[in-house]
Length: 522
Image: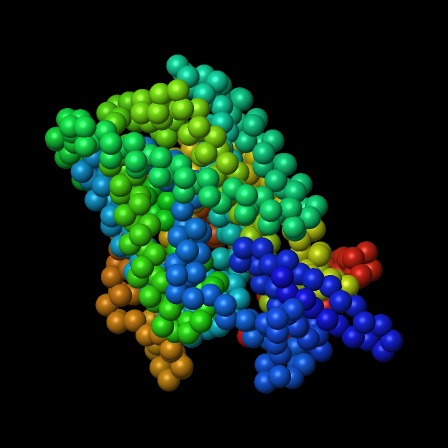
């Protein structure tokens, strides 16, 4: 907990902000000074000038734990089927899982350089803006609003509902309508929790964090016991029926990379790491192999127990695995996975508001979203409006995506857009080396690292067009639609739109007792 103090002529208000996940809890009003109960975050140079430095409490292993915890989520319970579907064989699927981990590590090292060179909030949004200007940065914000957040939430909600309902229909698929209805209900419930109380969000996240780790330990332990008992026949011809066409390989990677998504959140812990310029790359080099090993072992456990045909026909792979291996305790697996995805969805809905708050602070979203409450110094309009009215918009899109019958189509849809903008961010690294060759780079990776990443990511983007033209087409169309939106609302905004925005800004200021944000991105 961080205490925040603000002093006026005759009043002194002392409030506390809860730090949840990766939320940027910096003060945003000039003259505010932060204190912690133990002297933690303080003003730069000991002055109360509105700038602060986060208390560096996290060591190397803390950083590793945070990274692993962010990456390991619902994807590992969904993607194994998708990877196998497009790779065609166990051997190619395992290779895809290994190379997906390697590619994620290469990308994370690139982001380590970007994050220490550009110490700004917003991640990709900040890096793309610094390298290529405001329009590409806005387009990232645009697709995050319309694609990345709602589609990712839809996948997680569907996974939750599928695993929770599967035990009720042990011999067949749960009814389509039941799965989608439960997914819609849980999405609305968590949206309401996020709108109501930030502390509730923190408690839900903390409560369900360990469930996913426990579920994976149960799967790997049962798979290891099965193999040590001599049951290796399913692994004897690992490359039978392999699909090696570039389009299939690209889409298989999309499904694998979906499970590793979150590695580009590493930069959010930089401000709180002790000796970040040493510990950040070390944390990456430790955590990414750990996650890769966990994922590969988990998939080997799946393949050792479930024949490919049975795995592809299952709508809940971990549940089918548990029914074969855990006997009367099989009911625990869907509970573990459901709890895991419940916590992941809760965190995703809350964390999305952080990016949009930063976008509003830069003038790329309505200014009301960057207003700060004068009592608790939190962005209440951003949380209530974005996680309320705007999240209602996101929730509506999420609910729409819930009715797309093929969850792997949603994964391809999300992964294409995400890998495209990660490609642009890493290309920005090369652009900044040319544009600002003398800039301070505490971490500087070898030139071959971003080049390898860009070549691989380019392969995935290009060849996915042939295998998933519909998903790629929709994603590209949404991105392009952001260009006229940018020029109408930001480039040369219409007069009436500016007036409406100002009126809404004043309304939020009065309603939520807020003042404008005056802090610049540092």
